[in-house]
Image (tube, rainbow, N blue to C red; front, side, top):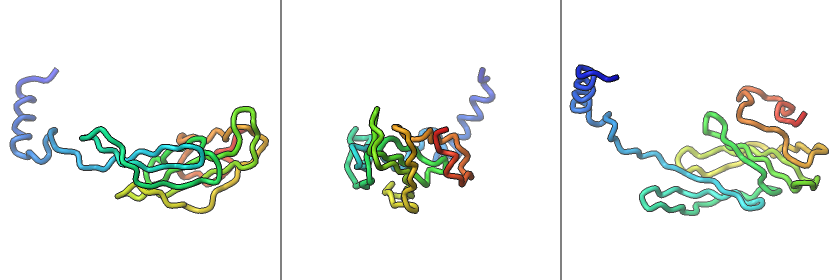
Length: 142
């Protein structure tokens, strides 16, 4: 429980340094990625108008299965496959993209890597895998 002395100190702190107060306006840009088939589209999020504005995107060699950001938020990993539930498919790729810190635009980071195994779904790739791991087998289904 907060006491009177702590509350007064916090209140005085906001008066002494208002630019650091809780009411400080957030100026960071928010982006949203969505996919349909092989298209991965970038949208700007306009919170004030509750709207998405299409800004661009990338086309992958096969349908996007799932994507997740690197813990540093500088890269986006995307699994793509021509397969699906019960369908083996012929193209299975792991793609890495650099995320532009200002616009959120995606740029390829190296060549896509094949994970073509006899699987019908992407390997158990997970953001829980340590970022320092360089082994492509660490993301393969076992």
